[in-house]
Image 1: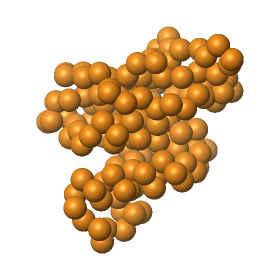
Image 2: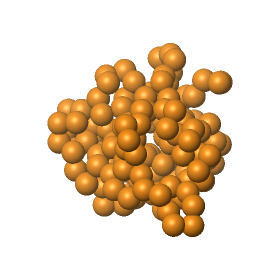
Image 3: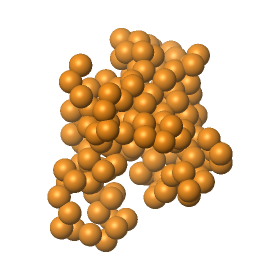
Image 4: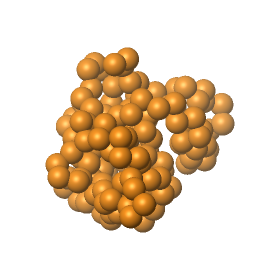
Length: 144
């Protein structure tokens, strides 16, 4: 990252221990339709764009007392030439969506709908198909 900026909003989700174990395995894009690579060092997830290799998010995880793992701090790239930030809510949703839908392969329907609503709100466009918005921002996840 060139210009990391602390994220004002963090995902509230607590990932179960088995989910954290899968997140720690990371994710490597297999083709051009996949947009994200994720790798873990210690307890920090590094989320990079697959085509450019640019780091976009870094999320530090901490164990929760009753079990599971939560993001306790995160930064986002703020250099416009590397990543066009939209809003704090967008960063929160995108980070959680990459971890949930791309790394874990979850449907994440509510997060997908929230991302589409945020994208439409930011662009002022209401006639863009949701699938096109999702594919543009999130990309696809190949079957594994």
